[in-house]
Image 1 (cartoon, rainbow over the protein chains, first blue to last red):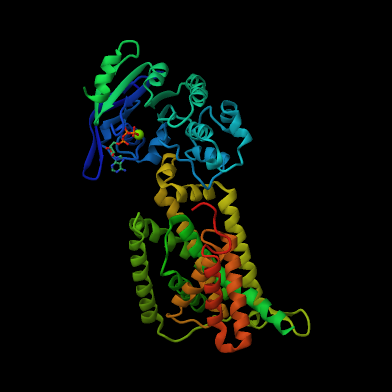
Image 2 (tube, rainbow over the protein chains, first blue to last red; image 1 turned 180 degrees about the vertical axis):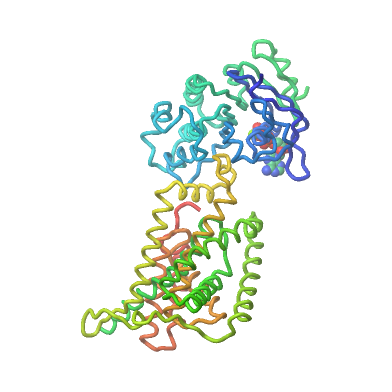
Length: 232
Length: 288
Ligand SMILES: Nc1ncnc2c1ncn2[C@@H]1O[C@H](COP(=O)(O)OP(=O)(O)OP(=O)(O)O)[C@@H](O)[C@H]1O
Ligand SMILES: [Mg+2]
């Protein structure tokens, strides 16, 4: 049985429709990457799954349960955590307080402050700093750590490498095996196609609110991707 | 020595003003809500205390046991089912709605209790005082009010910075969507914040009723003192609000000492002067 099943998901902002019937499936232990150009609807998709945008109940099935109409604060209780685009740390909270906010839902699981600090040792050093006083890469670690603190079964990462130096991106992705080891499934949105190919078992490409390509990294050609990306 | 006395009385009065201001500061700090009806809720609490005292024959201080929980519940319900719906990018709807509530409250109180001025007597406590020296004696009641004000600010400070609920308050105030992603039910959190603010309003209302005469129309002036204290102290800072209340109290006391007619005006002048030199108040919150 698939972990996450998205069926005919539509979403938008007011009169503006951003997604037109997305279908996507994610199996347990599988890492899937979504690529697509600016404005393709990737973030809208992630926000819809996380419950920030309303949907019909059956648009999002998680472990066989319809959760499409749940609000975000209930979705996280079900075991889905979003690392939002732009990190969105709480500016008036310290690093440690940001991490602790992640545990607000009180979901049981393997993650706690100590394990986050083992995963990202630099955060322990900076734990009393305001989250926003950190470098971009460190802020991203806080955002990931904060999401993990809810002990998610499904981790949604929206452009975690955006604006970061390549070595920093590498450092961050180095944490993924440890995250997946505990059975957490990961769905990432990546603008960097090579990065997406490197980390994922399967990729989807979005274009203007629709899935334009789906396949395994080894099996899709550069030309396929170009076509799916730019619609040529 | 006269001046020492004046300043001490001003500081004590400031404790009451700080209490008026703390509720406002909380609502603004967490929900970005400017509650025009704040003063009228203080007066509502005064009248609730009056009803409790006269119908049950309790002492005014004991009436807190009933009035505080009652105002807590009123605050929760009001925020959850009315004010939350007015919050958004536009700051006008909550202003209009609370302005309307202010008028409704004043008229209902006038209808029910008439325009007669009232006062709650705490018996011997009203006139009890501690003699510090020949020229300086401190009223027990003003002292209780002041200590309560400091305790409330200290307690809220602890709640805000040392508890999980306080963390959720700050996070939600920073970024509502992201707080939701953490599992926070924003409407509930905002309702709790309003409930706590109203519990403080209840204490302020009972003390107001014990210290001075009140009638249904005195709310807006309390709102004004509260606003001035919040702004002098700096938006969103609780200790700043306490300091703002004390500065306002001292300014008024000094003004009254120079000429009894100058009390209120001196407070306004000090407020304006501080605003000119420190537009963000004395202790503004660093992130906004
Ligand atoms: N809050 C909003 N209000 C109105 N329109 C929005 C809003 N957020 C996004 N959009 C629009 O929805 C469409 C999809 O945006 P979305 O952010 O999902 O794209 P994206 O694929 O994540 O892009 P990027 O790579 O730039 O992050 C865009 O046309 C965008 O302009
Ligand atoms: Mg995006």
